[in-house]
Length: 171
Image 1 (cartoon, rainbow, N blue to C red):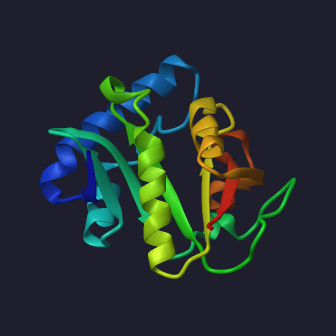
Image 2 (cartoon, rainbow, N blue to C red):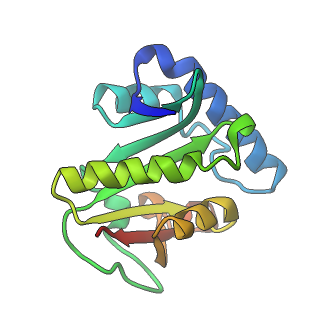
């Protein structure tokens, strides 16, 4: 399996994986990704910015966004604190194809992101997920992230926009 920067020609496969994730979330009662976000335009913007990566093994099996621009959603954290307040790399929009779940692909994508971050001089990463997205919480924890508190997307302090924030100090 290789992990590489996504290309525009990958969009259909990426959206297929995202739509699988949406259906999984809906069936599990998780309101995450049930609206317009993430959209094809979000992923095209990530590709244009060099932030979108795909894991492939003959076909695309996973996708994630690696972002070093800073995320305004992390400016304020509740019921906890981040371990470091310095520049960080963030991992967002992680999704794995249903046919590839349980094969460690998400963990390999996290390792890839951590390697990118170290190579760019970062010693710290952040990520977040919905409180009901237990599988993502477990994956982050298994891969060295620690639950640090609660953030709200767009500063909207309501259940729909609440996310559990995680961070990882790179070694």
